Each structure stands twice: as C-alpha cells, then as structure tokens.
Length: 609
Image (cartoon, rainbow, N blue to C red; front, side, top):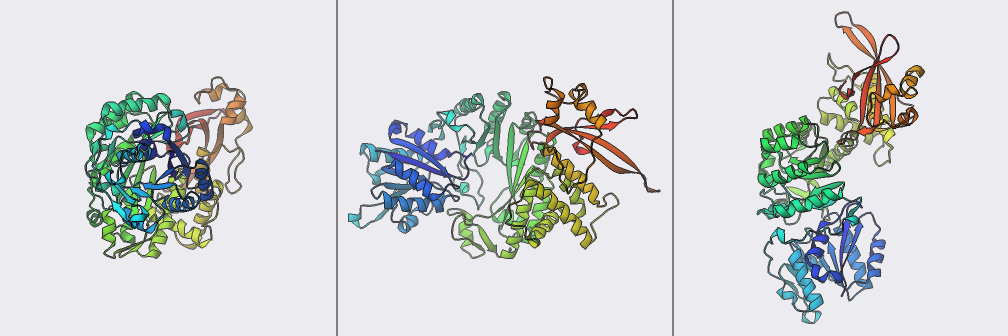
C-alpha cells in the first residue's frame, strides 16, 4: 500500500507544514507514506506525470485557495489514468463545503474536514491494516460503494486535539535547505474577524513550551535562514509570546530570522522592551490593521485599539532593528474609496517597512461569506474568491486600487526608492495621491503588463515627475520646492544604496570622483580601511570592487532674506559588504573635502542627510 501526501505550494522556497505533520503523526505507517511537493508554477502536466510515475494506491492532496483549481485539474486527469487510485482532499479550502464538492467532483473518494492528523492516521489504519471502516472515522466526507447508490456520507465532526501530541515534523533538516520553515506553537484565535477562517476556532491551544523551546533550538543549531510562525495571533497569550521571544534572543545564532503575526495594540511594555533588545533582523512582525474606519472595524467583528497600535508600531520603529509589515484589506463593508484612502494614509504614516494592500477574499466558512449572501458584496465565483465590487466600492474603484497596490509594491515595498519617495511625498496632498498618480501615469502610458527592469523603474519615476510639473503646479511649500535635479541626485543615492553599479545610467546626471580622491582611497588603502569594517585582509583594488564612491553637489540656502546660496560637495562611500539586515541597503560614510584636498569624514551613516 502506497499513500502519497501531495502539496502544491505557492513558491519553491515554501514548505507545506500540513503534509509533514500528517506524516509525522502517522509515523508507524512511515514505510507506506511518501511526500511530493510541487509549486503552482509547475505545469499541471508535469505534476500529473510525476504522480503517475509513483502510482500511489491513495493520493492525498493539500488544498488552499491558491492551488485548488490546479488540484482539481490534476485529480481529474489522474483519475482517468489511475481509476483504481483513491483520491482524498484536505485543508481549509475543502473543509467547509465538503459534501457539495463531493457531489460536484464524482472522481473523489473523500475529503478530510478540519484538523487532519488524527483523521489521516485512522485512514491509514483503514487502508493498510483494514482494521477500521470509513464510517467509524470522524471528520470525513466520503462516497459509499457505487452498489449502494453512490451515497455521500458525512461522519461526525472530530474533536480538537492536543497540539502537543503532534510530533516535530522536521526530522531531516537537510531536506529544507534554502526553504522557509513553517512552525506552529498554537492553533486557534481569540478574535472573531469575519473575513478570517481562524475566527471559527476561538479556543486557542498552545503547544507545550518545553517542546517548543527544544524544537526552536534545533532550528537555531541548524542555522535555518527563516522560521515563519503560522500562529494566527502569536501574542494573544503574553506569557507564551514572551517565553519564545526571550528564548530566541538569548540563543540568537546571528543568522536565523523569525516571522510572527501579531496584534500590536496588545503589546505590553515588557514585550516591547524585549523586542527592542534583539539583534537587527532577528525577528520581523506582520501586523493586520485592515482598516481604520470605525464602522468597518465593528462590521467585521474586529477588536483593535488604533491609538495603542500606532504607539506600539512607533516604539518598534524607534529600535531600528525589526522589519514591520502592516496589512490593509480593500473591499470591506462600509469602506468606500475615500475611506480606504484615509485608512491607507493613516497606516502609511506609521512608516512600516512594507504596507500590504490586499483585497477581500470571501472564504467559505467565514462570517464574511454569510455577510455576502445579503448581496452587499459581490466576489469571484472561483478561487481565490476576491471581491469584485461592494455597495460602497465600485469595480472601477477596485481597479484604481489595484493600480495603487502595484505602485506600492514597486516604489515602497521593494525598498529601492526610500528617499526618493520621501522627497516626492512633499509635493502631493497625501501619500495615497502620489501612488494613485503614478499608477494612472503607468496606465496612461501603456506601461502596465510590461516587464520592467529595475533601472527602468527609476527612469519612469523621474519622467513622471517631470511631466507632472509641466502639467500642473506642484503642492510646494517654502521649505520644499520641487527640483528635478534634486530628485535625480536622490534617485542616484537610492540606486547606489542597493546596486553596486560601475557605470551610471544615462538618465541620471552625476559627477565623476576626482582621480586624486580615488587614489587616496583605493590605492593608498589605509584611508579606506579606516572607514569600512571587515576589509583588513583586502587590497585596495578588492575593496573598490565591493564599495563605490559617488560625488554629490547641491546648493544650500545661506540667507533666506537675500536668497544667497552656497554650493556644497559631499563624497559618499557605499559599502556593499556591510548591508542593513532589514532593507539590505549598503552602509554609508559621508566625507567633505578639506582645503588641502583631503577627505574628512563627518557622518558614518549619512542616510538622513
């Protein structure tokens, strides 16, 4: 008997925690169980061929909104090729309409509904030992023998299990090199957000802390690059969260990054102090805000203190050591275009490293699915069931927000235009208006749907602002007057923070570093070694390949009354060996030229200049 647990992941670097947990829990049948992982980027024919070659007796497929269409296609074709093979589905995408799906897909043998560990173990007992009948297995929907009229049977719901009874799923860590590790220290969520399936399971179950710490130590000892906790609200139990955060801080290996999804408004002073003490890049936080519209928050049954959330995010930001990812959802009840614009600007003002602008997914089993039956929310009939329009947001406005989403991904979340965007924000009424404006520019110029190089994004941004200033007056103040030359200099600075370019792009003007300055740094060697770390054994030529020096010239207003300006020159050394772990920007060192022609350092981190 061969049982094939199969996952179709969103990306190659992802691993499917569910199938590993099922296999670990049914360990006594290990010789009968194989795993197969694919991605949605594989051709369905490839997946079909690979599964066919294995010729399993039972095929069990893990189902989510991002892979269900592919899963159903693969299962359909494999049933034609291997008609005697039993096909089972499981996972959140099939747990809440299992009977209807069985009626629609006659080739399915059954569906595991809800938590799968105990159910899968009992299925193995049924298929391998023949000591259990399907009707005795809780938490499944299955098709009776055709001789009985092809009846679909729904068994009794399965009780929630003790999470500590699930064995550690990662026996061979070598299998997960170059992959993200997903880890679960709790199940369930205390909140009742109507758009989320986790709200169904309101009882939070914690894994035994001794087990958790022992397993985290294995990740740390193995120096895995990243561990993502899939706990729905990681810090809902303060003692649990603190114990884990203190442990990874005290056992930090200098490499592993831990990702947590949290509620920032319930963070305590002690938790904030622990987070502030951590190594730069040790943890990253994902914080769901979703909306700042009070009516919307109430309608989706969400509990959130926005003022406390704002204070907590600012506190974490001040530590300069943690990447923060804040989420918004477009298409929620009572949120129209203007209201979403306000939500966007409020969250943007918190200065997250990433702002995820998502669109409502109406998930089967969620309270939002019931809400949608009232007709106020219309969504796609097929996965991922994304909102099309609502009583408050038209499809035309959804499309405009899609443009904003694309521009936020390119010009904010990429981290490649940080200081350029900060400069440009001064010339728009709000940040949202900037992203809306450049989104419309892409649309008008036919730039959407085109594969752009990183360099072309810089050029498009510069051209957008040049054309915009010719069309209408800018939102200028006495302090900020738009100057395309200033924008070019900041774009060049942003570019060199990320890219070690040895030839400058044609669309950006710049000045060559004088030969004597270059000689002082990269030929005499001693000068540059005073200002960069970790290059003790490098020659000047080697250092020049891992660094870059750029000259910037700009005007400073000396007298507001007379308008007198003076020219100022700065030389910035970009060090690509020593990058910021949060945004991967090169470290920088700023110099001024003294009267004797030598460079004098005045700032070892000139990013705020």
